[in-house]
Length: 232
Ligand SMILES: Nc1ncnc2c1ncn2[C@@H]1O[C@H](COP(=O)(O)OP(=O)(O)O)[C@@H](O)[C@H]1O
Ligand SMILES: [Mg+2]
Image (tube, rainbow, N blue to C red):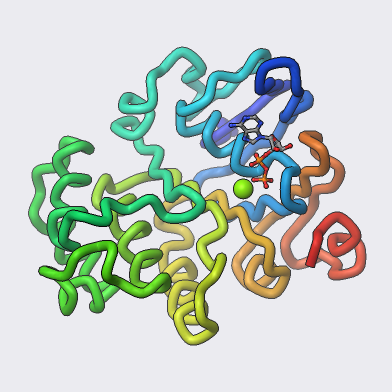
């Protein structure tokens, strides 16, 4: 079976400092993979390599069997890779509506139904339509950041710590949305919170100092086994 995403022997360096070491992993179509590891393990670096924002120093990345290592980031996003960065990075000075429409344009999506789909998932975005992105709460900004990525109708969604710094009630609603996206697209979820990852992941991979040190089925993810690689 062709994997949806397949990564083989990926290295990355920041100058002389090696941040990824021979990382290999694969994701099947529609699968949710949790990527775990403590701060500085290389999770964000890996996601940025997949999104085309950083250039690996060695290794291969295949999307549906096609080598994408040389593709610039815009081609990867048009090719179906949606990226929700850590810290959200929405446009603070644009309204909620503008943030969504800019993303729709950037992805070359013309079907207006996509906006209905995103607002159905996150009703708060419609309520806050004219509000400045920078004036939203952290949880609302996270919903906007995910909504913005979904405007491109991704087939692979990269989520970098979607619950970081967000109040528990919103964490629950973000978890429910991600659960509802499962199966409709493949999801690579970076998450520090064990319970959140455990409830969503079909499989998990643990990174430590840039290398894969553990992997397995979500249902068999053991708190003690995984926790020794996590900071919390
Ligand atoms: N822009 C950068 N320049 C130099 N080193 C960096 C940069 N970004 C991250 N690093 C280093 O790379 C390693 C991996 O970082 P990162 O991928 O952000 O880890 P994580 O997301 O797992 O917390 C860390 O040692 C970090 O200090
Ligand atoms: Mg990170």
